[in-house]
Image 1 (cartoon, rainbow, N blue to C red):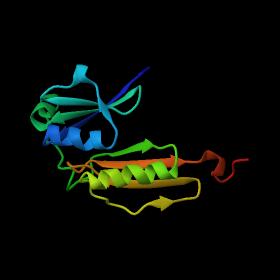
Image 2 (cartoon, one colour):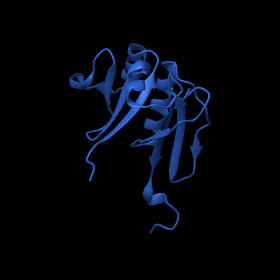
Image 3 (cartoon, one colour):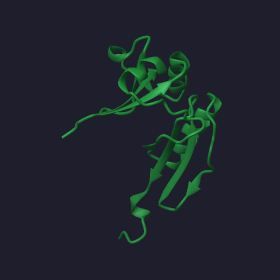
Length: 136
């Protein structure tokens, strides 16, 4: 059974992408970060590997999707509160992200989304399971 998740994302400018995510509060594991890759720590067991496009190409025979024109993946991260969702998205926007959807409040779940500098779509979600319909 897998114990860690590594999300591999191609980026055009590794330094700019690392600066973007650092401004959102993420850190990078220096052990797996160099001029070709940045190992962004999302949690103890989840990492986003930001790979230069040239390096990313060494892992696949397929063309790299242009995430600004096609949806390749939706990356959803949980937050501890509605305010944390709003803060993260505001920081992302200030750092150059594109807000591609309005926030959605379903009562028990609140989410808002942004696209990073390369167009990868991130959804930040707060879920209050005590408010889930049908929960007692």
